[in-house]
Image 1 (cartoon, one colour):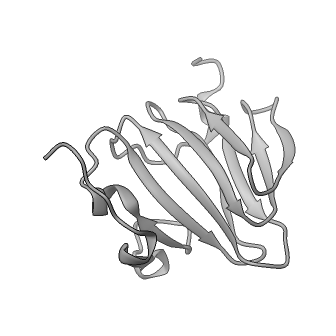
Image 2: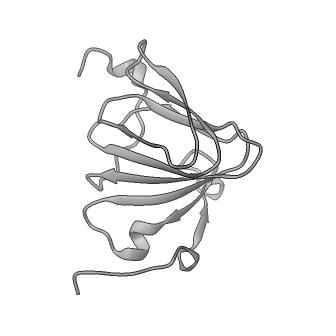
Amino acid sequence: MGYEVVHTDDVPVTDLSNIDEIPPDLDIRAVDEALGAESSKVKLWYFEPGEEIQYHAHSEQEELYYVLQGTFSLKLGPSGESEIVEAGPGTFWVAEPKTGHGHRNIGDDRGIVLAIGAPPIDDPGLDPHSIDGEE
């Protein structure tokens, strides 16, 4: 067909705390799976106050993020050179492969972040401290 349309409410919520192999224990909506996307991964991540995705990097995947709701503290950049940035609704950021990144909901309400990753491969998080000098 070449295209697909889906409404957020029609994408099931997955509780990652029920899947031992996938930290963190957050809720997500796998938009990419609902759409049948083949060239990118697209997820909506839901964060209660204090919840986070810890500082990590990917070997091949670039990730682009957009805050839809909430206030986040971002840790961005290579190991030893990272910077902390505050991000609220309307904020974009991107992390290239082998660049450390992580974010935590520092607000009092639920936060929602759209995450888009490409290429759409399983690229588990790496410890940014272990890839120093590889860039």
